[in-house]
Image 1: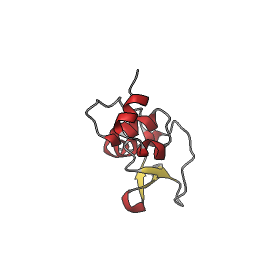
Image 2 (image 1 turned 120 degrees about the vertical axis):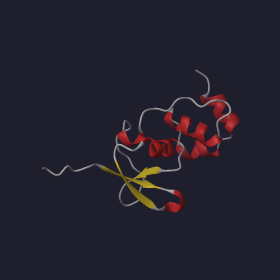
Image 3 (image 1 turned 90 degrees about the vertical axis):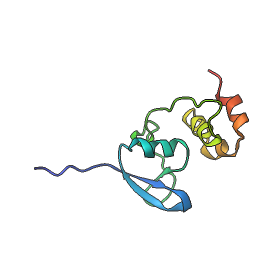
Length: 102
């Protein structure tokens, strides 16, 4: 039986710890990436600059409902091309106004 090498992604979690996950990410972790609770980084902790169609990012999420949290809307904004820090700093209402239109 041949050994299979899995691709590993490095992610910064809460508190700044770097966590390694097998790629593609399980749905629960991909959701945390969308909500910016996990952020993909290089193995040394610097910002990840890989392919925009990165398998760790998963498919573009569905647009959140107006009742969804600010974090869900910030994740949607990032999936639409917004800067992660800018989206995190915006209010939920601002995010809905800017990224909620079809």
